[in-house]
Length: 331
Image 1 (cartoon, rainbow, N blue to C red):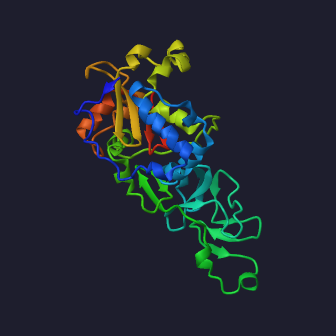
Image 2: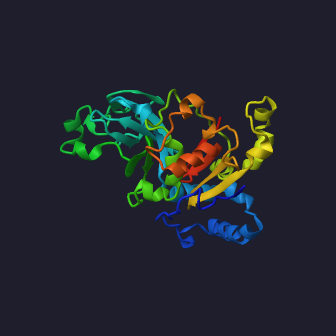
Image 3: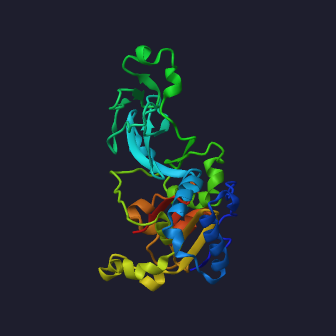
C-alpha cells in the first residue's frame, strides 16, 4: 500500500501527549528502546518488547495510565441505571448512565477495602452494593449508605468516599472514551488527525451508529501490541490467516486487489489501513461493503464531501485509536 495523498487525508495535527523521557524508565526498558531506535532503519525490533514483563509493567503506567481508552458506546447504556464493565489496562471500570443522564466511568473497587462492587458484565441497577461490608453506591458513584456508619466511622464524610472515577470522560460519535490522566488534552485534540478518519467512518449516516446486540468479547493469549501491529498496516496476513474469506467467495475482490490502498499514520499513536479502489469509477464494494439499502442514505451532513468520496471508494478499514483501542469495518 502507498502513503495517503494529500487529497485523501487531512492536515495531520500532532497530539500534545508527550513521550516520557527514557530517564524515567527502568534500565532494561531503556536498553530495549535504544535497540528499537537502532534497528528501525533496517525494519527490525527486538522480540523482547512483546514479552518482557518490565516493558509491560511500564506500558500499563505510561500508556494505559495516560491514554484515552475506548470504553463502550452510548447505545449500550441508554437508560438510567444501565451499565457495562470494561477495562483500562488490567483494571475494571463500571461505565454507567446515572439518573440525570450523565455517563460515568467508575473504578470497580469499594473505597473501603477495594472489593469489586459489580459482579456482572452488564445490566441495570440504581445502586451497587459491596458484598464485604455493605457500602452502597449510586449509579454516579456517590456513597449513599453503609451499615452503622456513625458507630463505625463517626464524622467521616461520605461525600469524600464515593467510587474513584476516571479523570476525564468524553464521547465521540457516541463512542465513550476515558483517561486516568487529569492532564491529558481534550479527546479531539488527543486524536489529532485520527478524528478526520473517525468522522468519516462513524459519521456516514446522519443518525449515527448504535450497538444492536451484546458485543462479542474474547481473551487472547498474546501481547496487546500484536493486535495493534495487525491493525496498523499488516494487510499481508489476510491471504493466509483469512484465506477462507476468499475461498468461500465471501469477499468479491481478489486478495491482491484488496491490498491496494493506503497505510496512514494519522497522528502519533493513531494509525489505520484503507483498502480502496484505485479508480473512482471501479465497481464496488463501496462504503466498506454496507448494503446499498443503507448506503443510499449516506450523505455529507456530518462529514465533508471529500470524506464521503473516500468512504465511497473504500472496501475495508482497520485502525488503532489511542494505541489501546481498535476498530474495523468491512463487508
